[in-house]
Image 1 (cartoon, rainbow, N blue to C red):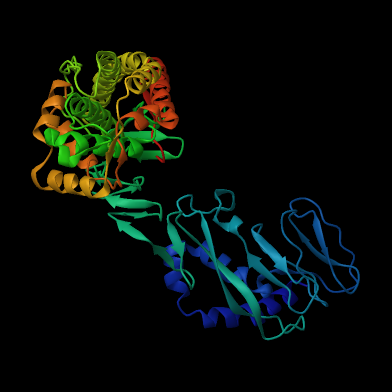
Image 2: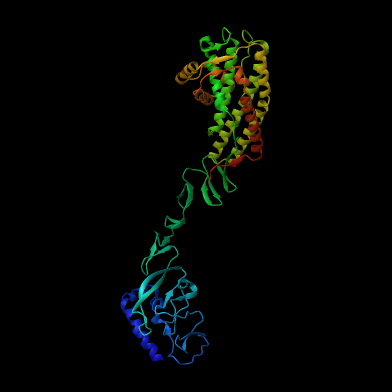
Length: 510
């Protein structure tokens, strides 16, 4: 029996060894035992073959498992973790625990290597845990009526940070880094494999930093960079809390402002059509003040919506005390109507001046965040909340004062003021070429506007307009009154939320 097995082994294994002329070089890398395993893994003749048919066999001890002979009694005794791998006429078993039999009981039975060969339990190198394999043609056993060659695999092990090569025993390093090999999710940094930085980041030395000097933040998905003007807090990027809608229908507001300024600029009768009135006079002065207050509103709106960043954040904004000249009654405007307009203008000017101060405080909060000073940023946000609360309180009276002004104007028989499209276009051409009218700019400065605010007002005056009523109709417009009420409501909401939590999440941040 022993002679038969040795003879079969010589017939089947010798051709395979002859074909692998580089066996010595392989053994130099993997060791003699690993080399023998690689050849035996794909050659069924390297398995243990059972005794001749007709002999009874009892398995015990270290080889308690019987792989039976397919043609009758007998077989081969093997350890429990070895796979039986006989053909139609021979009993056989795979020669190690990491092999698994493919096509058992057929002429194409073959033992194939598995990933278990790369585990420490099977004697594998802990530094090379990745299993690789290649499908090749291996030598079959003619004695067991197999083809001279049949398909089988050959396995080898690579390091975990290497890719399997196409052919045995190739291991491919994706990124060579000194003596190490970096994986696909690593980069080589000064001779060390490091995890890739998050989006918008790069390495400086051994540390990930943001491309645009933004704040570094470690969130649920890993490292990220917060946008400019925000900070990392609670695993996310936050910015100064801001009103969701600091102004409603600002476009309509600007159209009215153009009409009012167009009608009052230079107090020229040729730029103004008064129904039945000979000259602008006191009405022109009232229109100019209405335009200035509307301009202050537009400056505040743009200071909120443009999100400017003020680097001078160490001091708080000082809210101005808006001041307007006294409206003098006269032709076209009696004392009651002048007093009603004056009360309305004072309340709106106070509200919009405080709203503008709130927006400027938020700009300083952004400046503080851009310098990483979140303590000062929180202080500026709370200052903005204080101004917003004052603005909301002043604007709360505006809807009622607008109604009183309309009533007084109509009872006094004050004529509506109309402006034509041509007049508006001529006025806009003047603003575009030489800037704001001097009288309008002077009133805005008296309301607390600075150079940046005057530039915002100038830009707002260049929006498209077709002209129309400029005095009574805009004040009586229910939609515009509702817009003012919504502005006050949003400012109150902002003041409450900003005092409770100075920072809000960044929309669209990772």
